[in-house]
Length: 561
Ligand code: NOJ
Image (cartoon, rainbow, N blue to C red):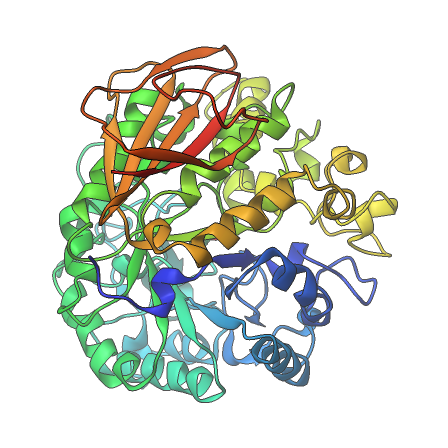
């Protein structure tokens, strides 16, 4: 069994502050709004809150472009509001994980303002500057937000690297001074009492020296050049240094966001004796419904692929390392729309997906609104969208001659604003999110889907999440049990077991809107069974050797073996 730690046993809730709860009527969520909702989260059973960035930022990428790492974004409130939030969380025995965005800063950060002044400025090497090549960009790398990853700066006649927007210049981690600055700012927040960091695209910080041209543009999954900055040559050295200098001195939880990471690499990042991170956010299951050219190329998802990927990660990290578990976040579509059914079987499929995720081995992350089954949104006009990735892509595809209807279709399925529409608190105007005009329109379905209604309905998705979280707290097997896949070839049922000592959990999930027949595999012996949780009413005496599962039915049994 894996070593026991608090962060393995925790359930994390991600807050995207801009869209969570607005208390001053400016249409933008704020810190006071979070404090106001702590009892709601405590009631749900949350142990840890991951707060997306709340630092000072010009908001080119909604706070993921930081201009001062030690200040609070004006729209979100003051440092006093933040202190109060932390205190109120700790009073309720909840922990706070802050977002650490240090692959890049904002171009409005003082370091970059200095850096662009002259080639001999002491801050020049804080960023990645290169001369052009034959009047063009230094290499062919593309920005993850479309276009070239380089921006020309007239002042010094050189280009700087930005893997994300033009206002997010990449920091130069080869420079020891940059690393020291990062460690200092981490200590600043840790000394204020926070309990961990979620690290933004942290496996992109080490670039291959020489910054060679990326491979051809055909059939690529990631932007051109990604091979030369994902999991780069010095990444483990940098993380080990960060661990030694900072993390090892505090009892904290860390999760590194890592596009393009595989299970072997994840073992290195999260292995217990490696002194790097606790867990990573991997992307393999987020890429299963994308074609070869990346996320905007829509491809149907198959259950086989989902089983294969999750099983690979469950088995890959079962002896060393640890999984994070998520089906959506602020960058991804809503999980019930993507993996379930946001129409007829909205309630059942949202509960089924929750069962799936919370019964896996790892630390579950709930994204705000997931616990009430919030869905994707379809705005008619591109003008109602705000996300820089979406807007850049729209412009680029339009210029390439694509049909706007096709582009909108991909935005409906994959756009990040699906996750960013304001939290639906109740059925009052603007879903109770704000008394003003929300920065991004509210999903019109808030009359039916809102927290108030679900808190008052014991059969709601909210109450189902509460039970799942409670079960984790009362049963070690949910946290530490070993995962094994059953029925690998079944086209509609995903079934697996978790084993700890003489106990087993049998998890049976119908991933389809049709009824599906489950037959217990002969190798699955048991002495006695007990229903653990289910999303339909179940007759406890019913045999489990054969079950006709209803649409999106989920059942978990606890077996004595
Ligand atoms: C990943 C974050 O989750 C995303 O929201 C952001 O746009 C990029 N990193 C750049 O910071």
